[in-house]
Image (cartoon, one colour):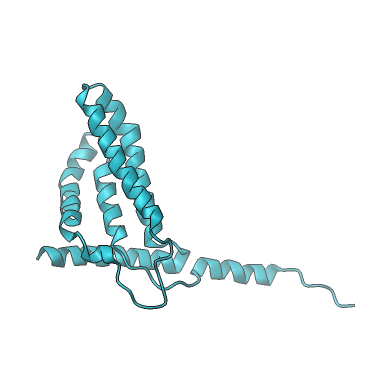
Length: 164
């Protein structure tokens, strides 16, 4: 049952990334990096200043947390940016580690009302979302609709030499 829920969530994230890839050329790796950057910004900008007031144990936790997020961000940079190929391949992240990914997501859903009500940061939810974007399969490479529109507009507006 948990695997089915994880597969359903991945399918929802994949449909979003497929749409953005077709429309704008934004693949799942870009979404993953965006949400990791948001999580890092929320930890550095929100969690660390708040924790420095609480005591000496919290800065150690914040250092571990920032290291964890930076390691995930570095791993996302080391993965080939264009994982998509003309052949149908499955992302190995989709098969590996579904239980931790699902637990992060469920815990994020449980904590989100408390985080919003108490004006806390949402770094946990951003990290869970980035894990799901990491498990998405991208479409084969191709031109996005926006790029095709820009190319057509540029071709239509280009100045043609005058014939004399």
